[in-house]
Structure formats: structure tokens, C-alpha cells
Image (cartoon, rainbow, N blue to C red; front, side):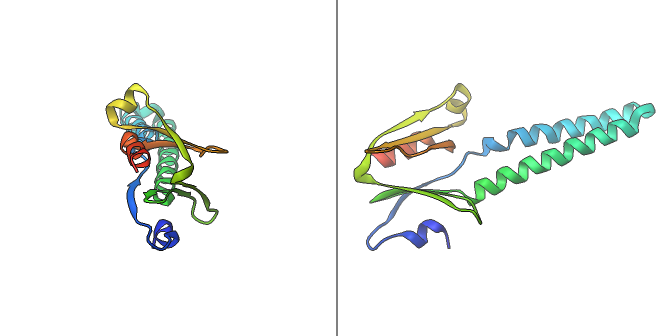
Length: 152
């Protein structure tokens, strides 16, 4: 059972859930493609093939590490908007949660780069009375998340 489902209060309903965008996988995918290109180079340059195979293996290991790390962060992160509050949870063993009642939300800021506009991702900062919410990085469909927070 998800964290959000476990912490729902009596009469509280989930209105919207958000996720981290798939674009976080791009650095790992780029390194994996680079490792494949170096493998091709190892086949072409037979004199230094051991060196190129070592470089390809190192790039492949780094790529797998990056891909696994981003998958794990994406898998353990939950973002939900209910009819009463905004809930953000990340982490597996060492959990970090942040919740804000809807009455405390003053504004929601969305920051998108040009690539973020094209691929529909961005950073969302929820500002509340007293103190602000932390910035949620690389969120898929950030305008939709903002509309669900401000539209209630």
C-alpha cells in the first residue's frame, strides 16, 4: 500500500497524483549509448581494443548506476493532492515527507525551461503561510499539478 493511501484521513480523497518525469533517465541513457559507441570503436581499433573495452565497461557501469538511482528515486517518490492537503513523500528506508493543508497554500510557482515546455516537465514550488514547501524537481505535467492545487 502506498504512503499516501495509508495517511489519508476520514473523508479525505485523492484528487490528483503526480510523478517525476521520465527525462531524469536521459543522462544514464546517454552514457549507455556512449558505451555502445565505444564498443563499436573497440571492434574497429583492434590494436587498442582492450583499452576501448575497458572504457566501454566503465561507461556501462556508470550508466547502469545512474539509471538505477533515478528509477529508485522515481519509484519511491509520491506526490498527491487531496481535497484537504498536498502530500509529498520520498525515500524508502530513510523517508522524508512534507504535507501542507490547502488552507495554508498561498501560491504555486512553476519553473519550466524551453525543453521542459516541449517535454512537459518542470519544477513546482508551493508557497504557504509561515514557511514554504520545498521545490519539487522535474515533475511531469507541472501545470496540471498547479491547477489541481490552486483550483480546489
